[in-house]
Length: 421
Image 1 (cartoon, rainbow, N blue to C red):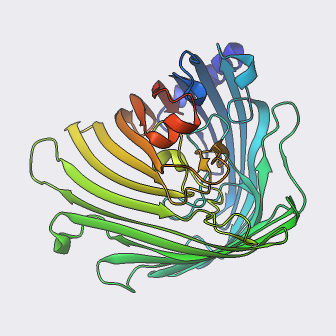
Image 2: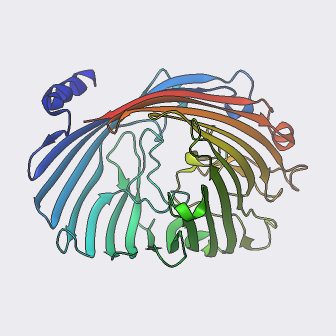
Image 3: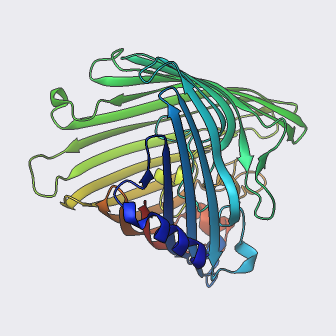
């Protein structure tokens, strides 16, 4: 690993400013290292661990004409110092193909583009669809994506299948696990705002009791950044409704959130205060033949529901208060405080990886209070090609966790550094 990284650095170092770049060819390298740990895995006192994550990406971009682009990204993800029992596809995937696509558009400023191959899908703010770049292996899709857009409107229409990370074999999709949709953006439909309506369809031939066919329709509304007419205010809101079937059961679920922020300017450190409330439905009646648990699809949950990654946008009430500060033009500090409750005491607690973190007891939980979490992050951006930072999140367990787990509080600290050439 070190020998490979050294060779790459020696190759591209003479052209540090823009990578190795010709008129039609660009070579690049990305490297990130992060040391993180956790106390009380599974809320068990003494179940602690710390480990180091490294990720190397090599990029090749060919652009022989203004209307044609070819892009390939190889990735090598490794983990060290960890308990072997915890090594999984989020941590390790040695020497694999993360992206490889062909992009064609009708001219350099054309309104139509087609991207075919292995690629990222990233819509909205990644609450439902994102590359999950926080993890050491991240996410990509085998997809065909048609882009249609003008000056004030755009639509992305895609047919895709998520790539499953396999630490011991070549990563590939699973037949039948498909994800299709349309995501549109309108810049002038609402004054001082951007409107983003969407429709997704997710399939899976292998779920309990049969197959999955799930529709998700929703819309996101966000204020235009830097609007002078809002006098320092900003806002965003999103709501999504789900229906379809999972096995022999029908599906009826929904989720939404709202955020309001206010930035004091010109004031030292440019403080921004924010308040948020997020909700996602849970299954209230587990035996009624209808599933009420909201499906979080393919999100980047780490960005929204606490640094500790113990909660997903499923079966949840989540108020949050936040403060953003800029002590230096290159430094950003974020302080957040979350409160968590189950939406339904008959459904489970789900973690950021969309797995069941704590099962609801038979007959339902006695209390819905999961707990509260305090988070602190600090990022220093050296340049567009390099940054480093640290963060820490601590979850204080509520009555639900104390009654259904060993009940210990848990802390998640990390430090990282990254660069691009």
